Image 1 (cartoon, rainbow, N blue to C red):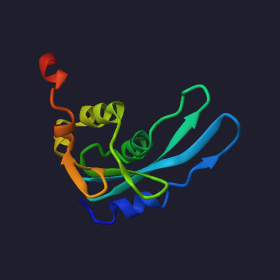
Image 2: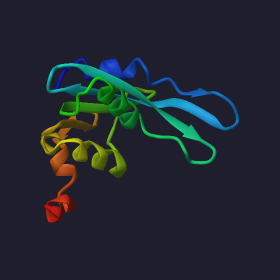
Image 3: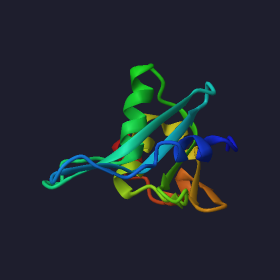
Length: 128
């Protein structure tokens, strides 16, 4: 994993309340693609649960640049602590490319694993 990836994500993890209905930046994420590019994103939380995770935001940024293969990624909270991706983020990243299951993810400070280990049973294999 790119040693600076976590530091890059930490730059954007700044919890901000926009109004009574929207807060953002509580979590930030950074994705390193196999091409070596880095994309970032922030979480958005809304009163009606229509927000999204920082990883989704970073994936959208990556897709805008026609990239979809991920080498490594991390999400951090406002204190700079690594947080594991939720199930929705795990599935999204795994569905972009089969190779993304080999992506390295920091699931807690200093603990790294592959996305594959976080998704032990691949339901998509039954569709082939």
